[in-house]
Image (tube, rainbow, N blue to C red; front, side, top):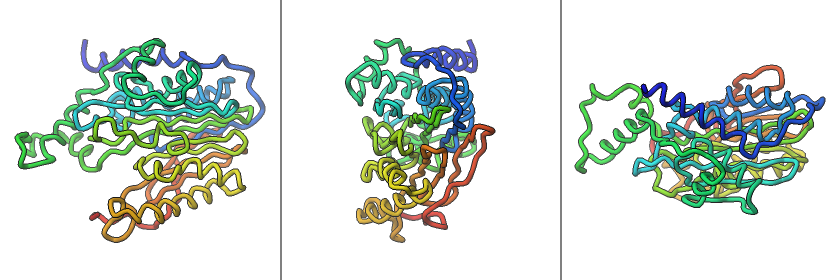
Length: 351
């Protein structure tokens, strides 16, 4: 079997696990649905809106939307094909929240499972816990029927190997000549991948669901966990106010519980844009006190992007530095729209 056919059959088999823990559909309501996501989520919001229009639960719709990206070996920040930790092992994090029940579930440092967001939903619905990690999370997923898959694709392995060969010129790893380095390796190795995909969905009954899923920071220390599986940091929702999620450098959100702050701002009557910008200002003010998170020019080292959706369907995206986009489906069509930013120019190249 060719590599291409193997990946296709693996992804198809893994998609069958999306039925585990999903709710049966109910008659659709009369509200206009909205789905928002990070820029890599255009297909995710299209699928999510298709499902909620057919009466599916908003969280189930969000999970099935991001599953498209989790199963895409070309997206190196999520799921299958995600870039590994420094040892060459792919470790995935994900969390979910369900508006009508205010329930949540999460997994961290999960290996060998293509769809960690779906596993997080099973943690929420089939356990009394919120967060499972590492080997325990894998055993839980296996017990509920999730198949194990080698998540390190050949392309991701080549990128990781080049990073390992070039990160220290004094070690014993020798890289190939520059002319032998594939273009896809050069493109992937330049920035350190912080990736991730978030999706928030407002269904036709006015209920919310959201998920964030990631393979985490490329070349991370094994066991590193970012904000994605932490409720309040990488995502948060209140069914009476709104939903928010994030991508980017997770440590900045862990230090500020950023998504919870955004939802709280919307609860207090702020627009999604104003709630996001308030939190961006808070992060920049607080985190630049730490020299490890401050550039030489005094600005924040690292970027975070936020996506917020209110109970009545208003939405916005925002970030510390400019250039970000978000995916939006307003019930009629899907498109990418620009995000607002705290600063009007990119960060300096030095730290």
